[in-house]
Image (tube, rainbow, N blue to C red; front, side, top):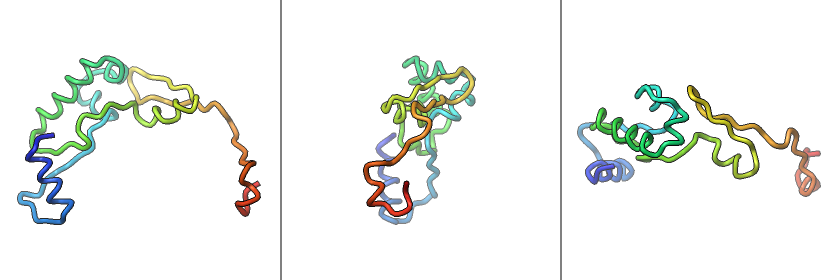
Length: 117
């Protein structure tokens, strides 16, 4: 993100008028590989591919403010994998999480939470 773009974001957050009205989008993996004609698994696993992809998108759309900027992520799979869930990467779609526990039973605080057995 450029300094000028950051200043625009701060003005918007402070509800100050901005002209022209800025456009801001989330920049992340679900749309970038398809737009750039690269595989998702390459985007996630090859640092140079990831960097080039982000630079290309910023170059193609210089007037758009991308938030949060360059984002190193694997979709919503990173968090569950930290709890032992298996993650699978694919060539042509976003990653998938496979749960470790099929059914979770709340037992410790059940007596303090009405309606939970």
